[in-house]
Amino acid sequence: MSAPHPPALGDDHEQEQEQEQDHTAPSVDGVPRRSLLRLATRGVVAAGLAVSVAGSLSGCGLRLDLPQPAPPAPTRRPAPDEALLVSVITDLSQIVTAEKAVAAGLSRGPTATTVSTLLRLHREQVTVLTGRLTNDGVPTRLITPSSSSRPAPRSAGQLAARLDSLGDADWAALAGATPSTRELLASAYSLRLCGAALLGRAVAAPTPPSPVREALLARTRPLVYAFEVVAAQSAKSQRSRAVATLSGLKNLEHEVAADSVTAPTGWSLPFPVTTARAASRLATHVMSAAVASLVDVAGPSPTAASLRDSATWSARVQSLAVDWSVPLTPFPGTDE
Image 1: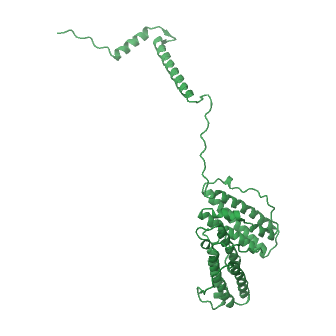
Image 2: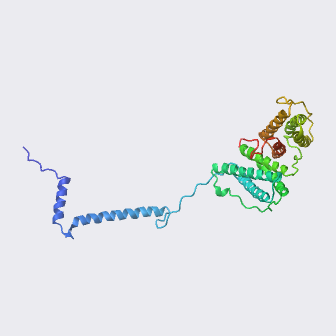
Image 3: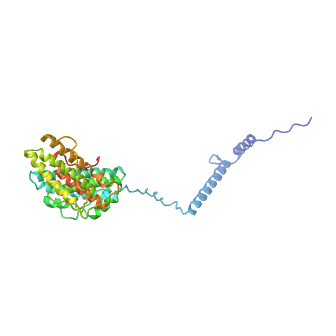
């Protein structure tokens, strides 16, 4: 038999030897010298790693001794028609301020009632248009109206002129807006012009005629015919109102018929009218339908001239419709 081999020395044996040597090796303050050597070695390695990482970072252009800049804030994308809507809100806010000043100087009467009504409706327009922007993520601070450099109107006549101050640039900007904004602002502009007409200003049909002039004429002539019937079937004060409205509609027909070659045709009534009550109902029915037709008469792709023409026509109709239980609204002809 061969002599048995001595057992292999493994990790356990080495650890026993280290423990024996630790017991016999000189110590410092009770800590074995070998343990101190191991701790020192680990410290050197850690320091070397720190130096290596620092060197790598400094090679990338980073300064560890300075605070790092904050990440850039994300860029906000402007809302659709944001600049146009902010401009309109600013203008409306200045009109509201003017209406408050004029209302404060008026006593009771039709003019005071009209200014008070316009003030309420223009405030509603500001609220709706501001909400449209904030819903699209526009910060309120960017919508805050700036102060006006114009002299503030102090009379109903000056206020009417302010309401009728929309220029070519306003209509051109409106024509370039998205369809939903264009319809909403065309409606708002028509109320604004209506306010001017109610305060006594002559809001005339624009010249030259726009591409929608024939469509406006086709809607005006049936109104004239309807009010001829209303006047014929009315009496006393209702007849006086009907005659006044008929006169206003005939003037509007004359203006929109300029340069037209379309001949009048016959029209039918929506229901029989043989009494004063039926006549009043007819007046309200046809005027409500006319006010609601603003978006339709402007068409799907209107020009600046078409928008001005249709809004002016609607303003004239609205100013006549208030005598027949058709109240003014902030956005006539829309769902707002």
